[in-house]
Image (cartoon, rainbow, N blue to C red; front, side, top):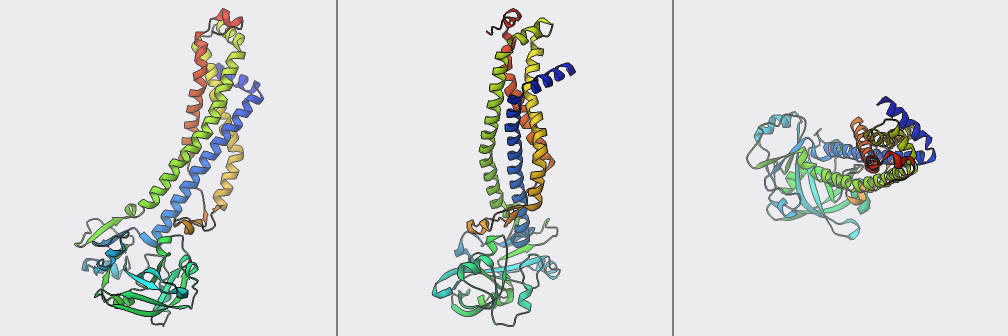
Length: 391
């Protein structure tokens, strides 16, 4: 085996330009596959962290009537916060949120919004509720940067807001923007305003009530209560997970194209090599090598392309990927435009498992592609091979 390896390496290096063209193309495949998958891994990690910090917490309890995809459910989606959560509330491990529909009139236009009430002293989410404690206006509100940009609002602006309470009575008041926060999570920004929880409870006529309870880090085992349904973090992150899975499937098309180009080049090289080296093959067999050993030699030559490609990719790929992992890749607010949880800059994540898996898959594929044309050697007769005739 050691002799076959040395002979295969010598023949491969001796092929010169053909070898290096294959190696360069295959190294590009290595690099692009690892880079693309690392970028998706980085997006997944960033999206989960942002959703955890700004919206989902470690899970949520929903009032049984609440359906985020049905705005008409909001009129009934509220009830008293269960007493079983009193201890957690006092420790700040649960953040109640009351949600209601409303309307604002920016620049003479009408826009339907969601009004969300949150405790100014909560620590579960990153929303800057502490700004409410410093305000002395009648109805202070916080809005996200996308909401502010879409409606031309800035800190200090006053605007009319209208809502309908639980008794069906319409009311209106003037709200004042006391803060604008930056977030990568459109679902806590677009088309909504945040007000103090006690203010919204008073406006809606629902004292002590909430729509959802956002959980912090505590044991939720066995914590069920009538009229409320628990949603785990995986349930709440399903949309993001599905989008990233879809992007991963789309990436497979890119991988297949790159691999097909590289494998086609290796396959053609192997066929040409066998055709041109018939006398050499006959000599090997005449000197005592079995046909299976000669097949193994040519297969090994082809598979060594992936080894050289991996080494070459490491030479120029490691610095490039390390630089991008440190500097990140800018998306310039694209997530807000499309309603996706995408940071302005995503930092790719390259795990050892990703690199090893990619290398193993490409090496196995290269070995199979190298073996397919090499099978014809088993059909050759030494005398005909020495004369340069291939059956």
